[in-house]
Length: 367
Image (cartoon, rainbow, N blue to C red):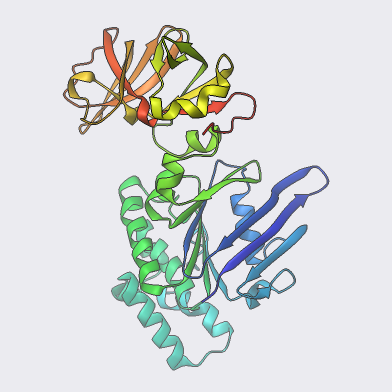
């Protein structure tokens, strides 16, 4: 098994396009790391650089103690699963999984062993004689993963492998991939734009934007303690609400003044914000920290904000309410017993114990 290191890696296409900008990450042996970010952020390019499908412009990539910048892809001891299944339509499942091993002129008994073991892990033993056209999308994806497993690599690279599956199958398959990681005890590096996939599967998540690493941490720490506005807005669904505001002094306390509403800052948070009094900031709060006061959970730090209901999305286990307070629009996830009606005025409470304030100029979090 092996760790993976990106040591200040940059990838340029031509003179003007910087796809990956000074990427510095160490992936631990047997870790499940997810690279996440919007389209064009550089996450797939970072994966392709590790696989040897793109050349590094600057910096060093290592697998274990070996620098692999100039090592051909076939000699890097990695296996890659792509968004496209890329199965040979005229070959059986067995032959698709065994194809790479046959090219290496591996012993037939060893090929049989590896394919059989991979098929058993993935639950596709009964499919080995079928052709890809006889398989469902989920089964084809398992075959593509099996083709990687039989190589018994040190590192698995997965590039948006669930994108072609329907919603229900995505949930099922991501659980299977997480279990596969536990069973194989191998380093996994997984690329996705879906932050729900990242949150549910990763040991750590690396959030990227415009080629640069924004933050790398555990899913819970990214959610609770984002370094900047981009990470705060990208992690969590629906996304965090942001309001242009000022920090003000009022009756011996600090308040967030968002013009159409004010909320008092908890005493334990005030010290960090003292130097930002009367300066423009960005106030952030997640939809799940905005409650109907009638059903607000105990132990929160509630601050009242009146709002008008614009849209009500009934989700069964919750209501996603699109609200506005004057010119400020925001989203709340409230108790399903809430009787919210479009155009009605309602009282909400913000749990300011979970609020965030960002520097308006740098968009870095204020702590």
